[in-house]
Image 1 (tube, rainbow, N blue to C red):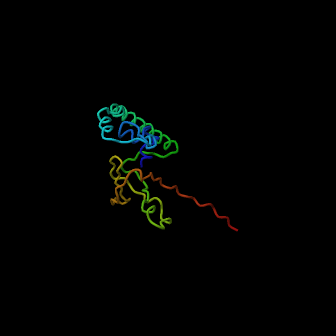
Image 2: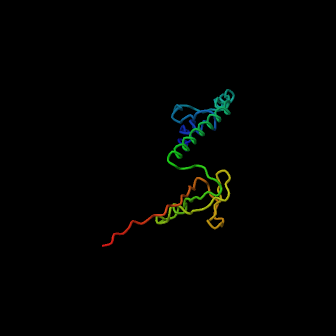
Image 3: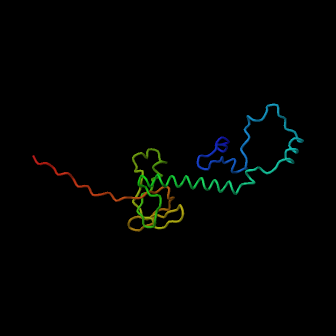
Length: 163
């Protein structure tokens, strides 16, 4: 956990430890082996300790983090729109829902990966309420687990040659 929390994140450009405590972590390897902790040393450190620079500038850092996240999300949206995927959903859109049960069940390889089509009845933030084609409410799900449904085109069979 320490390694995960002290690693600089790709999107935010800061480590979670820095965002929490306002300074980078001190690694155990940085402490000398013959370092003895005594009551006097601890009291002296507490008296001299000031607020970390990161905590003093916390608002500016959080604005920077928010900006970095927005830039990353915009990049994802651009890539999705470039390949034809829309990221935005509206009420009455027809969607497919990811079959989460299939991933969790042993031997669920033969089940379909997507369920539906469903119609979005309500949409609030990241939450979508889905209904069947006949209007029966089915489930409430996260928009990350749904994708747009496109009606397949009718296939015209090739003419058979007569012998």
